[in-house]
Image (cartoon, rainbow, N blue to C red):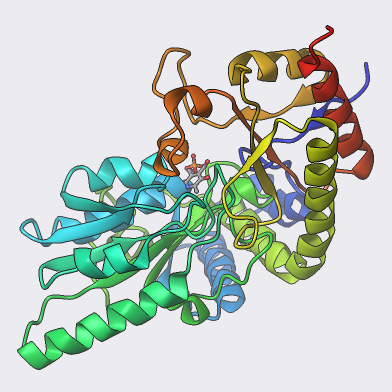
Length: 383
Ligand SMILES: Cc1ncc(COP(=O)(O)O)c(C=O)c1O
């Protein structure tokens, strides 16, 4: 059987062999509990600290600002609930195109949504109006997982700083933090929190050729969090449970490689994306490319196929050995269409005609060509 064409890298990436190697010793050699005080345990703790330091080095932060989690969902929950539980009367603001792991915990609190324009970029003027003296938390996704759009985090950071200045003048002591879910960003964009102007940042191992169920939260020194998981007090008391040392080592290596190789990968992937869009538009003129192309990560293309049902198209492509995703993040067949596609103004019917194609290290020009030819075949009227 020929290998399928995999175009769903935004959902999962294969483990990099270099990452696998970096994890190897921690499965069966240095398997000791990092909290154990005998020598082997202390060595395991040292290895964990080394992984933390490596992540900090890649991010240009301090090791004490990194908390290991089991993926991005947990990091997002920890940061939102960890901050907001301390300020039950306060407000938070999130973009309308956040991942559910931000939207769902945000719904537990007084939260407001920043709309996006039809290109999938947040409306900064509305954000400015939504932030008031009672807002403590703003969360904006860095690269959207369905559209690939890149949000203007630096502008948001500037806006927050201006607001904080006003607050100081008024003698208001309430903090105001900026968090970004950067799960989709590390393979292509600079991730350093100080450059982005964010206070907190979520990382996900499974999208960067690292191990699944690994992630980390960067949280600027001095910011207090309430833990979600209580127990033995690991991770500076913020995330109890025996540490996942192989996972931490793998995550650190994966992040280092992603950031080291990002320029080269961005260039290569940008070419593939350009070629894909050009071919699609030429061969299937009805298609509509969703979201901004100017402010977009090279790895995601979201396409409407007006008049076609995305689930059916996805299944037919699957049968022909091409793996793509529907534009929606629906889990059940009859569930609601994607909130992201609705946020950019698509009707439910339009949203149900969208497919998400996402590229990665193994995607080739041949894959792109075959995919467009196959879609052309599946959508042509004389079938
Ligand atoms: C932007 C974004 N945030 C969070 C997540 C959640 O990641 P995980 O399910 O690995 O915790 C994902 C995964 O699809 C994502 O794309």
